[in-house]
Length: 125
Image (cartoon, rainbow, N blue to C red; front, top):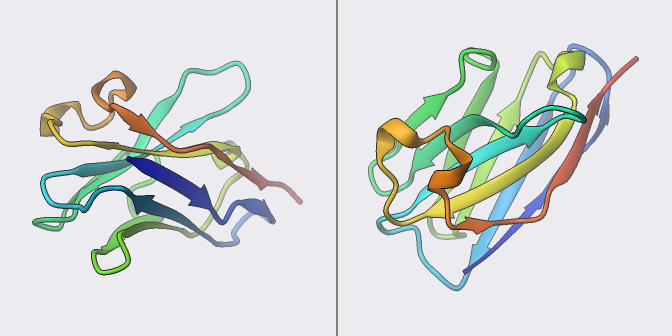
C-alpha cells in the first residue's frame, strides 16, 4: 500500500489549491482515505475523509463549506479541493488510508495504518 500526496504550494489568502492523493498497491474497496494536516508546533489534525465505496464524506468544522473531498476510483486517487484559503490553513498536508476504519474515528490519526508523505501548503500574501 502506497500513497503519494501532491499539489501543495504557495497561495494568497482567498485562493484555491487542489491536493491529490494517488494510491497504489490496493483498490479503494473497503478503504477510507483521510486528509490530515500538521502545522509547526501543533498536533496532526483530521481535515476530511471519504469512503470511496459509498461516497460518504466527513469534514472538520474548520474547513466545512470551503474544502471538498472527492475520489476517482478508476484512477485510485482522492482529491482535496481547498477554496477560500486562510493563513491558518498553512500546514503540511498528509493523506492516509485504512481498511478497518470506524467512521466515528475518521479524524484520529492513530486510526490509519498507511500514510503518504506530506505536501506543504502555505497561505500567505
